[in-house]
Structures are given as structure tokens and as C-alpha cells.
Image 1 (cartoon, rainbow, N blue to C red):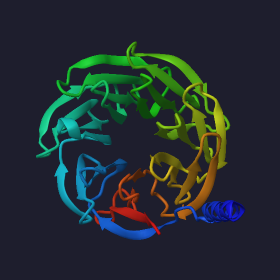
Image 2: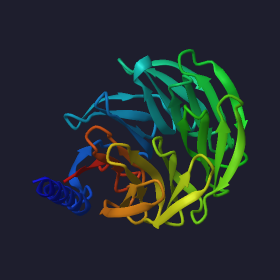
Image 3: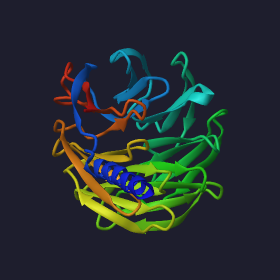
Image 4: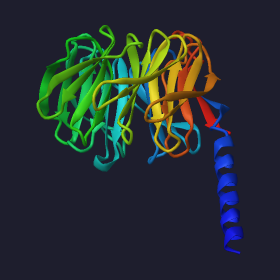
Length: 330
């Protein structure tokens, strides 16, 4: 009887393992367009999963989309040449990087009204909010610096951290006290000590090059890097070692990561694709090359619904074609 029980248990375990091994990875498909309209450029897009909002940077304003209704419900004006946007729900604030005026806007999240503007370095591009320290960081393209200010008061803590190269996207790990930022022209990751406010390491991203896209897996301490040479690279954020790389599309500009599905995304506007890869400790495995549209170069993921969003238009001058492409898991 005991032998039969053991054999039955082994059989059940083998069936479960076989089912897990054969389980298909999530597959993304087109869901819909969310029409925005209007001409002008765009850059980063940001999903606030908890607030059910999507913030779309668009020329001189931020367009606010309700992701439960998939429609525009508001806008934030007076953000000239906006590149990035991020929210701090616990503070009921949000922040933009306004490239044309070398400033960052602090906005009331409840009514979308301007609270104040903070001076930054030249041409602030990517922006992040780090909740553990309560700080906002802008990465200033022409200035080749980072500006740090207090999210509550707007007081500048560090006006210009010298990065030694042209920054693109930055991510933070509050537990380790580090900020990581792509230096596009040097094909490196600059590692910033959050307390010292200075670069403490520069890590080459080869076989990647001229990276713009950057995302972070805090559980595995892995950086997901999208390079302009059509390489998606994964780096150990504890020591700078490149542990895996795969091919991706042309014209990469952004990356995203979903901690629940453990999928990394790299969007490529040149080829009109998103490379979707499973993130593990020592390897990336491409599970899908999603066809989007040429020009759809930036991306965000809603970590609750697992939908991904990419802004696009026929051209910067087309007054009616600007929209957000929505893709969801089957």
C-alpha cells in the first residue's frame, strides 16, 4: 500500500512538472487604439497602475487617459518640450521634465494643477521619483548632468551631478542606494551613489551599444538595457556584469519590465516591433517579437492589467493621427 502511495505521488509530481514545462508563455496581441489627436512630438509614456491612469507626453502638455474607460479625461499644460513624466501617489504629486525650458514641473495629482517649477540642467530628458529618499531625479541631455530635488518642497538638493556623458533613461534602487543611468554616447551604465550624489562606477554594456532604453528588476537586481545596435542586454546591477543578451528590433528607444510576469520589453520604432523576453537570473529568453507600427518607439506597462502602451502618429505634423496603441495578453 505504501509503495502504491509513493508511486502515485511521483506520478502526480511528474504530471505537474510536465504541465509547467509545457505551459505557454504569455502572448501579446493588439487590443485597440486610444485616439489622442493633435500634432507635435512625443516621448515617454507612463502608466500609473494603482490610479488607472496613463500619462502621455505630447509636445507642450501631458495627456491623461483613463485606462478603465480607454479615453482622454484631462491634460496638463505648460510643459514645453516635455520628455518624461512620473507620479508619486503617496504625495498626491506628479512631475515632468520640460526639455525646452530646462525645468521640471511639480503638479497636484488630484486636480492636475501646477504647484511650482524647479530649475534643472540643460534639456532634462528622463525623470524618476525615488520614494525611499523622497527625491526626484532629472537626467539632463545637453547638460550631461543629473539634477536632484526634494519631491515635497521642490528644493534642489544637487543641481548638477556630472555624468561624464549624455544621459538617457535612469532607474533607481532605493534599497541599495543607487541610481543607474544609460550614457548613450559612451555605451555605459553610470552608477550614482544616492547619498554622495556622484558617479561611483561606469559599466560597459557590450555587446550592447548606445543604449536608450532601461528598466529594472528589483527582485533579481537586473538591468534590462535596449541598445541602438539592436541588442537587448541584461546586466547584474550588483557588479556590472553582462549576464545575457538577445537580438531586438531597430530604432530602440525605451524598455519596460513587469515584475509579476517577469517579462522585459524593448520597443523599437524603426522596425515597428516590441521584443518580449523572459527575465531570469542568468538569461534572457525571447518569447515573442510583437509587431506594432513603425515610429512606435516608447513603451510603458500597466503592472496590474499587464497591458502595454505605445504612442505613435503618422507624422509630427499630422493633426489627427496621434494615438496610443494598446496590446494585451491572450
